[in-house]
Length: 214
Image: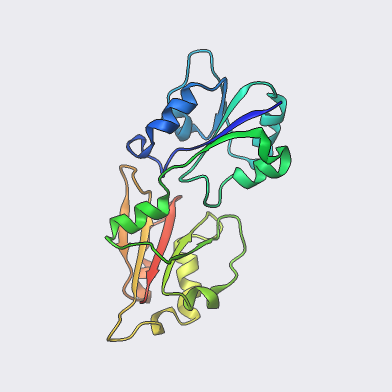
């Protein structure tokens, strides 16, 4: 019998980790996550810690620790493009004792630019092909999760070619932001006004693009 706890640990900083997540992680026999995720939670001295980011390796670790209370740390909120679905597909929904919700990087990005994220469409190109650009351009509010293979410069260049800067008008100018390393000490919020700004976007591992054209 597997006892899996999927624990959302927010966008990166411990300041954005809920007390429920900290309490759950500290009660687990096994904790699996990336190095920075493990560093921001509390674990017991006898807890087994596995530093891992590869999905299949994480699933195998869960499998090999059956019978233990296993905490799987996920970035942001477990309900947005996380390991939750993969875990339930392999081990069954009944194997997950609890999913601890958290603050997503999307929530944080919209908060930083002082906009609501109500009625926004969310896309992820983290390990996914760069498809659906026309659909993105048809939306009023969009959040795009970038990845190493499709960073913000790459995504915005493709969107620009597809007509991104023709989307707004004088009455309703388009707002474009690149949010990097949210909640970390090197956080950057970059306003994109035209194609020239895209060329100057610095490289970053963690990026979200926000586009508002309502």
